[in-house]
Length: 281
Length: 182
Image (cartoon, rainbow over the protein chains, first blue to last red):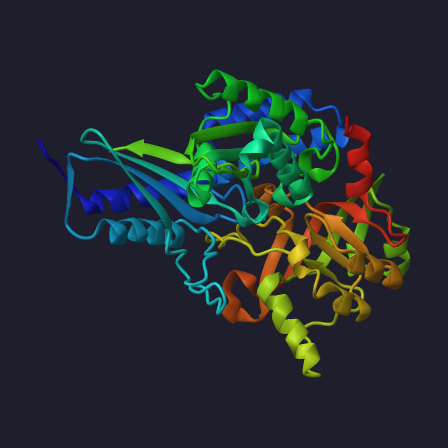
């Protein structure tokens, strides 16, 4: 059975999701911030976390974006293979949704049309779109606007198999230490291990969309996530990078098979405004 | 220590601030980020004059989201300062007294801060909705074509910042981390 979806439905949903993601954080992120505000040992760090909580309230009540960097729109499309789209090109429909969301929703236009000539496109398009074919007849859309203060601090390491699990842990700690105050801590750390050069980066990005209170289903990866979170929080960077015991709210790791010669590791850093809106159509 | 200061910032006040002070700024400040800095720098290289006087002024590294009707500005938090490091020493040498941003600075920016008796403040990154409440008016005064990156003149009231690098060269990012590093 084929299910037909008109691309206008995609446009409308993406428009709403861009606005939603930039004004309301998901419940897991809010809870993690609340928990951190209670546990933080530095008085200044506690004060900053309190301001971040207040900031979230103001954003929602006054409809003013949580952060002025409303990001480049990263969109994950998980498309059931029994879905047929009609009414136009899917990619155009997605970008039209982003355009309307950012223009009508008072969001900042932060995209330049060419990386070197750098002229603003004035509507925040194009989006970064990742398509995945899945079983079934649904379309799952994740809109994850990504700010570049933290994106700029992200890293890919092509480790050797002999570097092993210790090499991976060192890579994560190095990336977080180097990011420091630039990445607007407390951060969420997305990690991709395995695959190829580009696969590990994509896994790291997708790891940021996993709820921060959920660990990996793989027991030894879950242990590594917990251990790394503890180690990251011992770095002392703290809220705003001004010292403290809350440097990250979560370390989320995704893995994939890789080549006999390689151990690729990507670390995608996100600030405390780890935004994502999810809908299934 | 909590401090309440006026902007523009006079020299005595600037050199009296210490890393770690929590400061509330009231008065006039200017926004400029990547593209505006590049343009100002190129203007100076050509021997031209800047759109505003640097003497005693404070620059806020910030590009706001658009304002809704009836509001002075949209979300308005700091951007990462390090991208302005290439340009900051020239502006400090022209009399710029303060910079508001977030994140680390290079050694040459620190030296220019010390040389000129200036100060580097951090505002809380990712708190743009909260910070916008301390901005009472906003007016584009130059480089309108740069959109969010245009130079804006802001009137602020008790705008909250923290001194990170003071005129003695103390750096809160370096000292504070040591207290909680285990």
